[in-house]
Length: 137
Length: 290
Length: 136
Image (tube, rainbow over the protein chains, first blue to last red):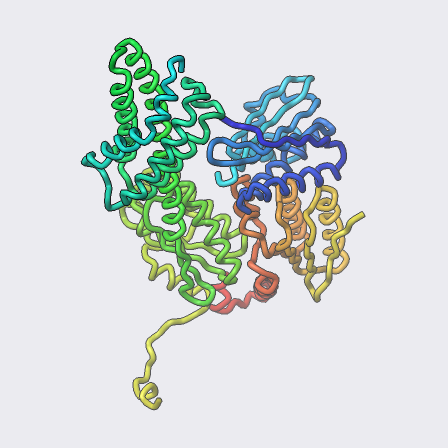
């Protein structure tokens, strides 16, 4: 069972918001004593998802939560946008696939960096991506 | 409790304690080597006081309620300490079981004239003490798990020493199975040491790794790639014939990685690429002039 | 508007990134650096990222781009000082930065650049010594 200990939502509209959000994630990660390499993985993953949100949906919302499951604490990030949505999620999760002008590493790469990864999308309504990184996972 | 059992038990606290101590001391599994009789008595006394004091007001069926937290705390504290001290589950469990016996013995002595009531009250005590036993075991196992977790961390730490074999050359002998958690630690230690020492070559010796499957190979490739990104080279040494066989049979591609059969040949390769030469001193006379 | 300074040292360009890159800054660096390579006829570019704590796929791509663009303009690129955590993350992300030379620190990076450029010149002279062959 995963318990949420604290919650903080940030509107991401401008590029400065992206920098601000990453700094907030970093602060929270330091507070729960996440190791340096895991911090780097988490912030890099956040960076990928924030960029997607800016590029494909002109921004959205990011929720930062401290979560706990028994012995370990972790951080759950939820990225919600009201963009065009992803028609074929399976395809978007393949290495090297991209509709934009990128390497197509964003989603599959992000998944490899975190412990839990969940993506839901409805065409025309938007996309929600949830990731969890445990402090020592 | 409908009948004033709690009052009865409260007044008989002393008798219960004596009975309980007698039960505990009579038990074969008593660990006099781990706990003194005085300490046992004070632990027992503390628990009885909390328990009997609670019987009056608390809901006997709901151990989750706040009234029970002092009792559970004491009991939990005792069983965690016992887990760490090396008591067996049976010895720890007996602590609670002998209390149950003591409670029932006293109860029986006091209300022997009313079998119906005795049965009802005994059932209640039984149920309560069973719940407390469950708590005892849960915390006991938790205590043991903590010990195991701490040891796992210690083993992970001591089993990944990074050795400076030469100025600019690091070696890391890996002994035991390489799983993903371990690879993480190995990789982080190695990379950190590379930064701190400014070493340009790292040798990962896997002669102590019992088996290499595709997952382990992936971990090794990851470590080598990360080392290269930082600007150093990583050589894998200690490839035994059976490892070479499995690697090829599994179709794992290690062609991008420098592999050597032994640590010695990896070191020789490292010397060569750093343009160092190791040779026998050619003149015995010279060394004698000192 | 932030700008990352590009220093010229002889035939080399030296860039030290002191802040965490955001997308626009990284894109500007790419174009500034290529302009400078052209203007100064630099033979080598050294990028020090020891102060950078996050490199994601976009910034990784920019670094790769700079290396590829420089190469077709006849300049070599060396990235130095990558943090262990960044290196691990890039590998897991699936970005091994193929074709980018790396070194542990600025000093080693400079040595690497020099040796690469020496080699090229000797290549042109068709006069390779045995030592250089080993270094290759």
